[in-house]
Image (cartoon, rainbow, N blue to C red; front, side, top):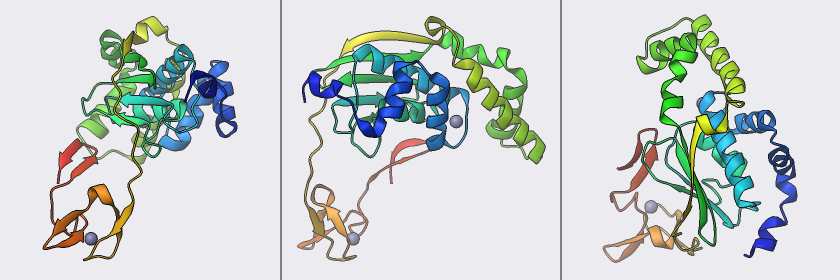
Length: 236
Ligand SMILES: [Zn+2]
Ligand SMILES: [Zn+2]
């Protein structure tokens, strides 16, 4: 897909593309929250970072792998990135590197990329700027202590308010940004499905195994498989 095609845009994403053009961070944040479920500051960082990267590379996304995001975290940031860039888990345009860094790279198919990481000093100073929110966070989430519904509601409200404020922090304080050349993996392959001889379910051929001369899925083969959960990627 060439650049002219990528610039044509996509009627399905026209509202998001308009908000990106107009730097409507608030509109994008609420859009991302439809996916994410709540407003929080890391979602806001993902929205702003996504917006910067899309504008810098001049890309529009039809979900056909013309633009790829490489995300280094599975925290709230990644949902902002997915909604704004249009690179998602389901359209094969999201590469996940299990690094635990609030960072992502957006790249065109020609390998021109931009990497954006949340600035260390900025990130470390959030607890000082928002002490009440982080006190509640540390108590209710980090230490997992039982709080009252009021405390929980107050925490959600504080993070909601914080996310709106954080949208307007100076970009050069918020992020470190670098341009880079990315070696992309080949585009995704649409492998045919085969039927597991044990459970009868269809399975993508590349994921099936042969056991005792029969085609079986990984679950029925009792084979190790990769799993992405809240702790990152592991072998199950
Ligand atoms: Zn969140
Ligand atoms: Zn099976």
